[in-house]
Image 1 (cartoon, one colour):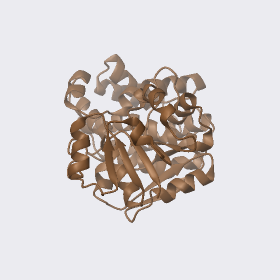
Image 2: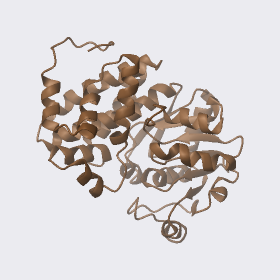
Image 3: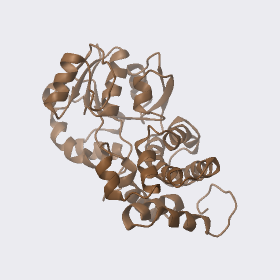
Length: 337
């Protein structure tokens, strides 16, 4: 039987543990709180992060990383992107040498501007063939409810992607393989920033035209950055690109969209941070994404305005005015529009 360790037991980590177990794996979730371990092991539930979800019997939980990682075939990483490096430094010595690292994270590291797979390889010394990423429209609540959905599993080694595909294929979740790790990761990270913008627009009372414009122009700037880093342009038209962007910008279940909506309604960053329990990755990733884009000469006007709202205190309505007053151009998905 396939064995998987899921680190840690937040909402997406918990739901993905269910997916793996439903696909036939024995899964151990690493949790930080004793109450969560007790709830999972005795009630098959994690009400704090996945309310209403009943976990399969094949899912157990522990506070001990060594126990979670013992004999694992897949090591699934589901922590906030900005703490990954520190967590991995503690966990890596415990990981079986043949295990595949699986990233569920959608962010860019502050300071280094590294993608999550790059952080994994840098900290653990794992070869690229041992690293995979999961991306696409992955709203945890909907997957927990077993609404039909599709996702992407990507690795530079096709067999790694195929193995992970088999490990998470269920009647309600259809995984597709992809070899473009760069494109899948960038799409997953940048869509959170565009979703913040979409949420702000919703909070300010704008309509469908505004949302559609943000999604399509956000996709254009995401693709520009991806292509500059060697990604396959077709990735951005697929599940990891357009699919994830539409879901994250449109759904009230999206943490980033919800965060942006509160900013658009006039709440301060501090107020939203206090009110919203779970991490909105775009809030911290917008700055390294913009730094990465500038280092490559890639123009990302929506990302730039989101970064100014989040980190410079620009009012959302002023960000709209900045975007709408830019020099008119033609719709061109190349380097500079």
